[in-house]
Length: 433
Image (cartoon, rainbow, N blue to C red):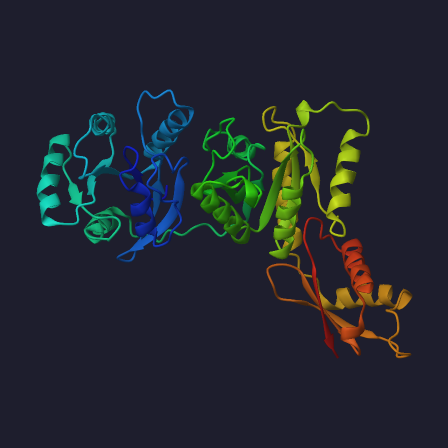
């Protein structure tokens, strides 16, 4: 069990600001509006030679019937269950509220180490006001200012003392980003993968805001799942919060090895889906397309074949992509998606021996050589795979700049037919021998 510090408290006391300071990066979205953070967000912190995990949670609101606040409450409870130490955060500028008392009462029943953190204590007067928080009944209190960093060093020192000496690191495993437009079922799909209501799910588009990382380690399979905010057209993004959510979703594509593009079967493939596909290809990531809500579609014998044909027609020339028809709600074929994702990861990291590459490719090139240039024969003499995390092949020729795009596509098609690169974009480089 990794040592984990969970930051909990009512809305808008500065939990995400403290989280960002502890992990040393602006990972959690910060805004003056309450309820910005919804899911649990994890990252790694290093302090005094110790490594531990920090989890940011949404603001806890008891007995609320608001759909988001009910879901946030569940997320906070899960974070408390998973944590090794609880950082209970309050705000000196508002004093002790009824909600603070309610959260404190709940935490007193939890048999775990708890540190009371009073935020926004950035002058002597506020330090005096902070003393009233001792009445909440916790043994350890830290007065800090998350925004300036005042007092956070002492808090981190205290946490570091509790951390065992063994070094903990994020596992070096495949990372799968779940991407797509809002409300296509990304968080529902991850919950089915994990067998737990780890991620907040509602019928309201835009529920997920921050990328949420979850580790999967079952049945001999180990990887990281990254849930992301739904990406809409720029013209439809009106809130600052959604703007930052979209930026983080795009960054998650850069962080991932493989992207699961989830689309709604009742909507079909849309322009925004194609934008995401082009971004995945541009970043040289693996791709698996998951057509969700397939249980809601009126089907005939060829409906899935026609749907897939339509998708690939829009994606041309990059059509060597697996397409699965799933239902997260009915749990249809969702675990096939995991198998396919791991298979695409294997394809992306495949290394081909130079001797085998030259033997097979030069034979294909000999049958259909490149078109000549100004009566000069273009000869490709040697091919090698370059050491990269994705497939890159260097072709050495006498006139590398004169090889036409259509012939480059022929070479890529030959590589795909001879070696399995399903779901992976291939990069070709042409150099002078």
